Image (cartoon, rainbow over all chains, first blue to last red; front, side, top):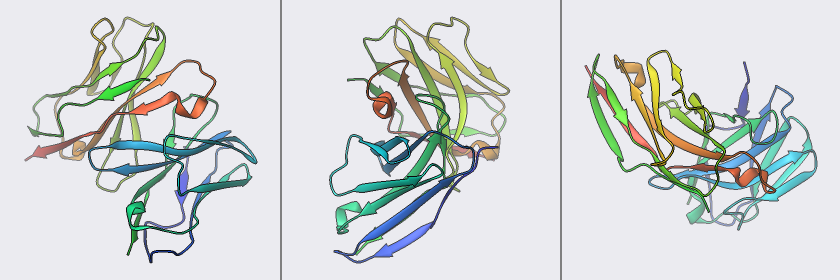
Length: 112
Length: 118
């Protein structure tokens, strides 16, 4: 079974802090994704990566950056957290482009 | 741009009964994939069922089946013999078959929260 893990289930940070969310997949998937999930808005793509050190902006990249130094790990970085980044963050991976995505358990981030 | 609409923010069903969740989408593409994902209260999103647009036969997966109406751009999910464990948020998703911007090939609907009543 594909396993996608995220470093934290819950996180509380203060405005202006730098925040790292980590995601690891164990199935040698090429593609990894970061979404945020907000009530009534579904999932919105922040960034995705189709290879090591490769990244592309999604629909809402502002205020975020990503890092993929190793194939199995994809990090989401909030350079200076703001209250409007309070949300649920979901990581996903897929074997190849456009194939079924497998999701991690999510990280609920609260920015005070 | 493609959009996915789920017009029912919340639904409830009695245990052992059947419920249908609706999903409509907008696209100019002729070939694509459609998915239903389930997100239980524990929050891990899992794939329920997948449909390829060029296949006329509706996909089924045990108690889960879809009614795919390509001309109407409708993709509803039917859950038969509902169980307490079916209670979750259900997301409909669309994916283009090809595209230059691979990550944006997936478009999710806003979700439908399903409650199962004992």
